Image (cartoon, rainbow over all chains, first blue to last red):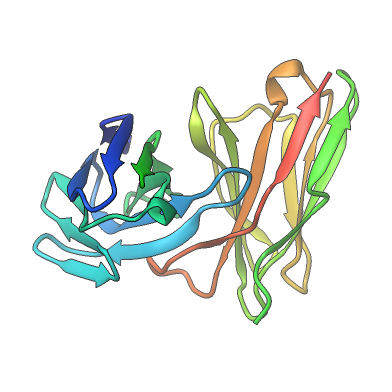
Amino acid sequence: EDQVTQSPEALRLQEGESSSLNCSYTVSGLRGLFWYRQDPGKGPEFLFTLYSAGEEKEKERLKATLTKKESFLHITAPKPEDSATYLCAVQGSAGANSKLTFGKGITLSVRP
Amino acid sequence: KAGVTQTPRYLIKTRGQQVTLSCSPISGHRSVSWYQQTPGQGLQFLFEYFSETQRNKGNFPGRFSGRQFSNSRSEMNVSTLELGDSALYLCASRDGTGPYGYTFGSGTRLTVV
């Protein structure tokens, strides 16, 4: 069974203080690893898809990286508007598996 | 381009009742998935439909069911509601069967009293 563990559960940063969010996973044949951002009362907003170890993707202050066991979401010089819950999910290739398995999420608070 | 639309946004039901939630995917997206989000369990997969056929189902009791129409719109139904069914129900759509990004709607907040 696919599993995703995110750490830490919560992270408080000062504005401008860079950090990384961790996502550890086990999956039968990785088809894709996804990062989402979720604001309170809203649905998850798609950020990145990573397909293979060594791949990196960037968007503004965010950079996602992937190894065979982990993914990191690096946040450079965060701003208060980056405060949200960040979700990691994997899609495996076992059988007719088309579902996403999510981690519990990391709640990020950025203080001005 | 309109996003994924879920209706209603909020719903309050009494234990034992049944409820139907609706999801309109992004135009052209044929795959629709449903997830339940709770503070304790996070997001959990309910089922996925593609071209009106259920392709995958999560570990939920038979009280949870769904369907997809020819225009790709989807509905999910929960019968004999329990207090533990209170959650945010999220619908997501995508335009193919590969590992592409799923686009989520804003969800339906169901409260069972």
